[in-house]
Length: 260
Length: 131
Ligand code: SF4
Ligand code: SF4
Image 1 (cartoon, helix red, strand yellow):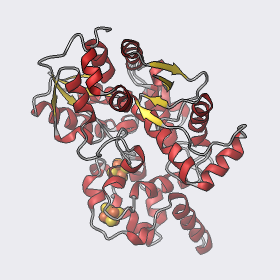
Image 2 (cartoon, chains in turn yellow, purple):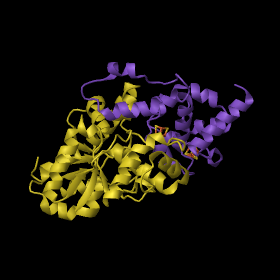
Image 3 (cartoon, chains in turn brown, purple):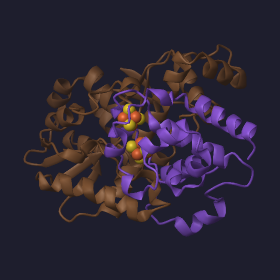
Image 4 (cartoon, chains in turn cyan, purple):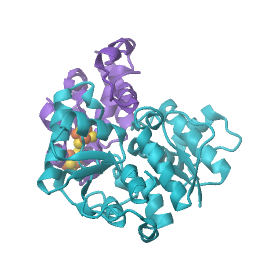
């Protein structure tokens, strides 16, 4: 099983664990995750305006290079995943954006949304399979009560992300079961942590993040998992609730597979 | 601003956002679900209404445009697919695209850093607050 992989900037710097444990887990699972030979920062947030072209180009380059390699493209950071999938959708469905982006890039073959983009969790669910994953677990996290934190970017907009039901998701809970732990469902699992507003308005980020952690704690979670470096930062730094740990889901995956 | 200029600005915002403000039925669901509600002077449903009324100046001058988290909740949950966040983004862009109007400047960054802050936070803030 071979995929192109887009790690993104933050996974090379402050979020090395998110990346490192994913790679170790893939080795254990027999998945060949090949980092794209060249990639640039996706910009971290999707620009919604129809006349924003330059800010979409780095995603198009990554998408086109995965196409040229003949592979699906796996992303891991929730933000990269959101940006790249939304740009891919624009290239497929918005002729004006596709034309203007291709005019800039002058690729050998114009790109029109051919690449299939998968979040790492989708790759686990749809390609590896949660049952097959479960069979490879050597160190099941029995007894751990884990809350899935989806935040905003994994699921929304649901028509484009097409990953799971945006209001009643199950993909991370199913993952938690596959590694032997018990999922904890709580109200705020798909609400925002405050995102980049932590730079502009710390008070707002603090309110949002503590609401998420309090909600997880009230349902008995001892740990919350995320796929997003900014969610991890906000929950830990701005949310900071005693008794609830916040970790990347890949760390628990590596732990369960005995490769941490 | 002259009438023509105002109309041009409104047209640009409508085109850039792709939002059809006339579809809004003022149910307020976008505002009810907005996590930045407390921080905003004008709320998502008011953005839609005020754009329809052509009150762009008020929106452009409001601190509300910097408080949207781009969480896509109002887009996902609007029963009429109006998608107010796209309007907020278009108004914000119309402000920062003007010369010298960046809301966040590189020289302000060092004071905002701490040891754990992910690069993603800085990159996204620049995308939202500067051109
Ligand atoms: S949710 Fe949609 S229809 Fe309801 S007020 Fe907001 S924009 Fe209008
Ligand atoms: S995208 Fe912005 S306006 Fe819409 S719900 Fe989220 S924070 Fe509120």
